[in-house]
Every structure is written in C-alpha cells, then in structure tokens.
Image (cartoon, rainbow, N blue to C red):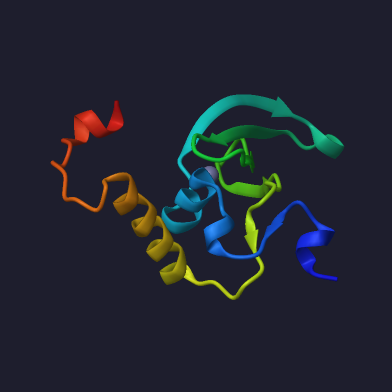
Length: 120
Ligand SMILES: [Zn+2]
C-alpha cells in the first residue's frame, strides 16, 4: 500500500502540491502574528503567540518566557497535502514554483512590481 493511501497529509510529488503549499515549501511561510495570550501550564506563565501563514493553512504557536522573551517551545499544525513522498529537495521545489509562475506569465517576461505594489 502506498503512503498516499494512508494519509491525507502526503502527496506523491511536487507537482501534486497546491500553489500555496508549494510557495511555502519553496520560499518559506509568510507568518502573520495573531493573538498573544498569557497562559499558565503547570504553574508556569508563558506568552502564547499564534501565527498564521497567509498562503497555506499552517498555524504556528510560540511559547515565550515573559521575563526574557526567550523561545520556550514551538508547535506547528499539520497541513493536509504538505509532505511529498518522492525524494524532494529545495531545488525541486524552486523548479516547480518557477515553472508554475512562468506558466501563469504565459512564459513571457513581465514588468517587475515595486516593493510597495508587491506588499499591497
Ligand atoms: Zn505556509
């Protein structure tokens, strides 16, 4: 039985990744800071910082020491279709991301947006 049949968290190859997940795997997540709450697990207080990725469904939770702001712990949610079964490295992910973008551009060069336009 293949691993694809076992879990919704796997895809076979980079070509099966969604555009959003591919972007994150090739270039990194784009974290948006969400709520910060005070939390006291087993008598210790920590800041619980929620961060959501704006291009895939991943949520990151940072547990931060209130006094020093040192990172105490970090947790990520699992995202369906995130893990590639075929052996894959950053080069494969970058190649697929570039191929898809070139297809969206109809394989033509286009004007580069200014930083202000890109962040809008
Ligand atoms: Zn992401």
